[in-house]
Image (cartoon, rainbow, N blue to C red; front, side, top):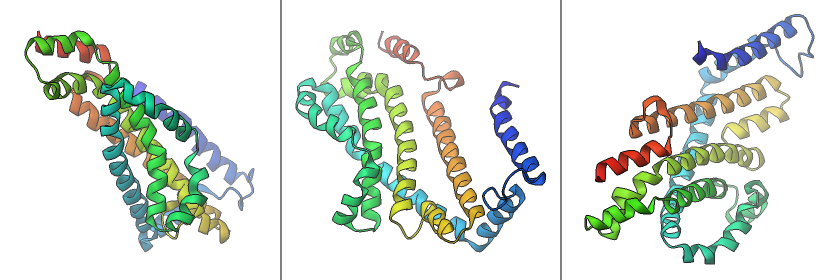
Length: 263
């Protein structure tokens, strides 16, 4: 029964929403009936509106995430292996890290316009640091005893990185990727709410201007559901990749596996 405990609270909220709507506890203009919201979902899906906006948002998120990972990961590997490099980059990175990506949107619009480039830039700003910091943490925290074992076997620096350091840092890297996906999704919604002509965020702001509260509810539900879905499938994929029983990202277990492999 443990796996069903997580749905108890959402079901209670849904029940309260339905009962409150039937008993007229809520203003139906502000809180539409759940049946009306469901009908709106079906209507938007049938017309292709929901699918089109959703596809555009997903494409932006995945494109931005791939670009960010291709930048943040090699940079993190370089910094993690060379601490002196981090001393030069640390002040600037700390400065940028504390700037909310949403605060950069007006400037990005001036630089890149309201096209896709500005939205991708927002995703990069939001996603970079979770991937970068977790990767640096995993690489710099590598057990030096394992590195010494590699040297004993005559490993080159490249072999040490591929066969020892990266496998040990993999839990941290995947945790950073998971956080990065979440940040990229949330930041994109903010960007689409401010400056966009398509996407789920745009659909919500357009519904607000048209006083379609039911469509706003649909957009919010879709954002939350899809975000949970992305996170769930990412965890399933990483658990299969790492072949850890129960999907537990246990760093100590990973270290023991590496030690046994090179023993």
